[in-house]
Image (cartoon, rainbow, N blue to C red; front, side, top):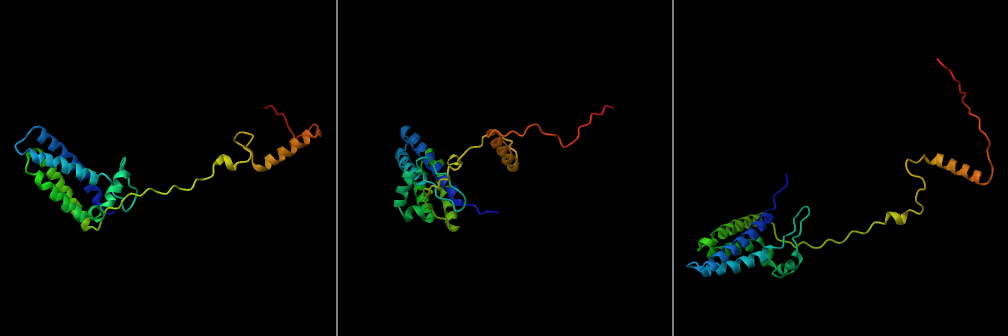
Length: 196
């Protein structure tokens, strides 16, 4: 049985947490809750988390499906270096970003989800995983076109007779075109009409 790649689960959880933080922050800020500035903080933190977590990391085995437009944000995340590559740092960063949002009811769900994502990232770091970008694959060499390799397509449709029979028929056609006619042929097998 294969090992679980925890970073993949943590990435999805953290991205969802960022979106939940943004939503809760919008509700708290637009509703002018008593501590609405925590809602504004949640919007900013949620946007930062979404930008950090949007590019998926490459899996160890198998293929990784790239998100739409990921290649542009991957360049930005690669610039951050070990801050984005090391999952210990991501775990601490997400846990730290979740604490201030926990003081407001509208953003507490995002806080809980981000704390769970932080613990999954910590688990991924214990297993030795780290973020590696998905690099574009080199395009495979093109195979020659089938139409380019066939000089003369077959003239008769399938099923075709075996090669020996085709050679004989071509020799007979050549003899017929030269004007040599074989005349009537005799059947080597006697035909007997027996009525029972």
